[in-house]
Image (tube, rainbow, N blue to C red; front, side, top):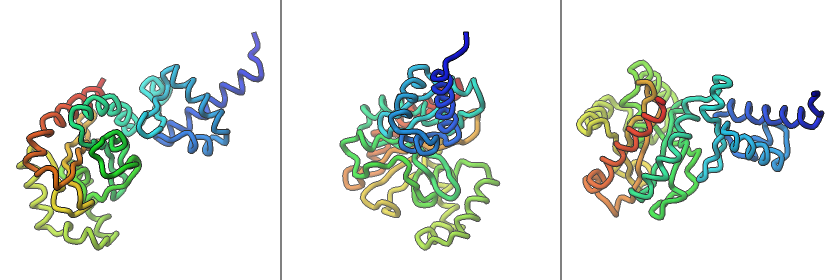
Length: 257
């Protein structure tokens, strides 16, 4: 039986949309429509179909569409970032209800960290809305410090060289050998936990972060953010460090399935 012209066109459009999502690592409906040269209603219908078939997932918090592991069986298009974001969504929903304070999962992009998924929009205690896609300074965020402390030595040298070349004035105090040595010591003393609690970035808040690995390789970090005037670091660790470590363990297990 010969396929109809309409069914061929629909399949072609669906594959185009899947390709755009795969290449981008994740995008919203409007971005997909622009990249695929299709109307938003058309993309919306195609994404619904792909989601129902299990080839894409849609973040309830951010609206970002990403390929799933099922799509990865068709190609190598599912990146670590897409897998990390997809695995984080259900775990964030579970742990956010328990911890209340907002959670982020972020990855390195050049000399910054980029937030992939977050519960800021759902947390009643967040003072920063719309954080998905935001860039964080590596030296002045807990996620960045965590990544820097846990990444391979060669990558660390590359990151620090890029940061020195960029010559951002706010980064200068954190690029000294003495500061970097102290930061690494503090992370080691905290069993791998990296901290931002001195008002060096977003002074109303503090945060800590843990590394996330896939197959033993560092791919990102999970952070919890709180209001500095509401909790001391000691209180935050007592409240949330153990659950956050549990979240990371579950996240890594999901990534290695």
